[in-house]
Amino acid sequence: MGVRVAIAGASGYAGGELLRLVAAHPDLDLVAATAHGNAGQRVGDLHPNLRSVADVVFADTAADVLADADLVFLALPHAASPALAAALPQSTKIVDLGSGHRLTDPAAHERYYGGEHHPAWTYGLPELPGQRALISAASRVANTGCHAVAAILAIAPLVAAGVAEADDIVVTSASGTSGAGRSALTHLIGSEVMGDLTGYQVGTHRHVPEIKQASGARTLTMTPVLAPMPRGILSTAALRPLGAVTADDARAALVQAYGDEPFVHVLPIGQQPRTSATAGSNSAHLQAVIDVDSGRIVVTCAIDNLGKGAAGQALQNANLMLGLPETAGLSADGIAP
Image (cartoon, rainbow, N blue to C red; front, side):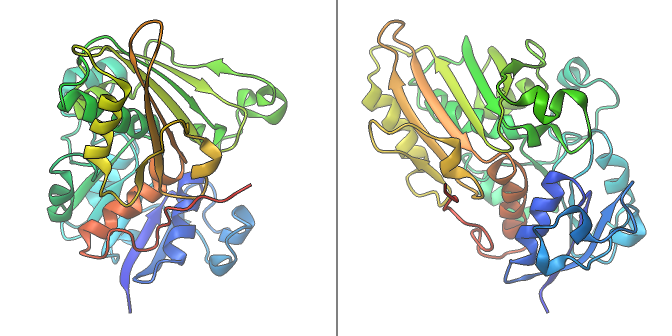
């Protein structure tokens, strides 16, 4: 029998992706999948793609339903995780896909989120220096935000290596509609989204303090863009170089940081990241160039927002927490076309 895991919020997009990954994992056994409004329904009724767990019935999201699991994934709406996490036994390992335990600074939480600030948990991005060991030793891990992971992977190595300034970083990040969740909102229906691009939370995006906290950035302008595709993120970070930096220097900083990573890939010179190439995977694809007009370093990163940006990242963290191979149940290969 494998490690017993439960998924709270399994009716949503990230929760459904977790169901898919856990069902195929060689060392994990699903013991509970919970939902709120969809409690009592079959998984197959909401996620018809998940044939192997189609007859699992969603239970109500309650601590006693989840308490028998060795590890619980919390894929819940914003601000819903802390109370449920506090009600679970201390012996239960938790990966929280929400934002409730990401930020160390109460003032930043108040500015961007509002409401009660909860203590920060171990941050769940293994590719950051020293973070893999901390995650492996943790019982509570705060998963990365979707836009945040793409931006952090692009920015952090350049700032750490002294290749780029930590100030005046500009990020434009286009995301598929699944990043907004599964709620039936008018601005997310097909006739509103198709053939359209629109910015949202411009100047006040909630991932800004998380990106700064994890990447070493000091000042950051971020513009998120809703793109007419179901999944994927393409994040473009523009940074001021420190000194006479070439494209080779910038790219070398990325290679130095990620050369041995199983899921983060620096592409060959001349090849740009594409969201379609990361779809269905836990991969991040990166490239660095120098803008010929401004001289800025431009780093582009593509991920699947439901993969490396959510469920795949959560499973990668869980593998580390459980002492399993980090890559178990995860693929570096995307699906195409």
